[in-house]
Image (tube, rainbow, N blue to C red; front, side, top):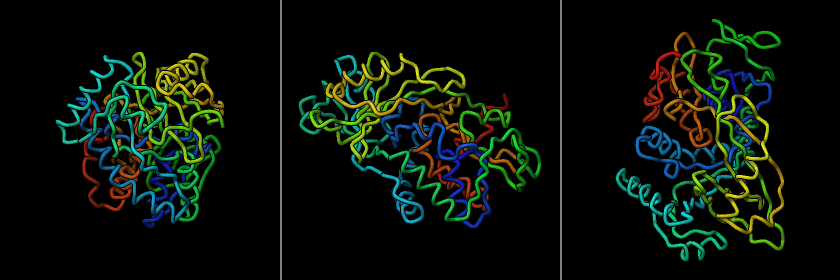
Length: 356
């Protein structure tokens, strides 16, 4: 297994639990983009016309999340799954029109959401500013850092070995690293934004995203109980509450190569956007600023499946790595065992775009 983010750790845990000997090669398992993720499990509120393949795959994975979380709690620890749901907020009439487009699209593909007025929303979520909103009870959230710790612990419990090194190449029967080689029979590439360096079929590029973590003070309103999403001046903003009282604020998204520094512009945009949605955030303590690299494919669908010659792909999940971890792990284990993968995984065939 090359890669120790949420996808790599999920596949490693599931594969080891199924009886496979697993080694994870990663210089910092449990870190990377997964460590700075917002934690949204939101196939419906991420949906848009033309992206049905991603919607169906995401919903298939979301259905697996409750049992995935329960089994992980027993094996490695509680991942902090929240069932509170999501709010998509419109700040003005123009945003409300876009919200209407999204609601109509979701209704056309059989996904029901509830439309509420700004006043009705404030009765549910005091302090959230909107003229209209959609309530999406089925879109959930997870504490990404609890999840990563639990997956690492579960992998160790199941016998997964960890090589804290960077993979530089793949040859038959071995993975080359900076410090040497790791022997193997099969390789799963789950290296996120760096996966394209390991195989030509994986047209994955990095998309930089910045997040902030904040904490309410005694004099401020508490965080919303649900995840709140909105678009502010064309930029998506989300606020994801944590059980410990923190609030995760994200996320910028732009092309910056492999730069993982936090920019002053990104911090300013996030805070200004969040203030429009939830004005009380001005009084919050700023706990952390961080950046990560999403692994983006050209069509927003991941690469999950067999590449040939003992190679498998589990990468390119864009904004939905945490969401799609269960279905990706189950798909790779099924392929290793020679059984049928879950529904809708065929849309993620790693050869669908051809080689670069």
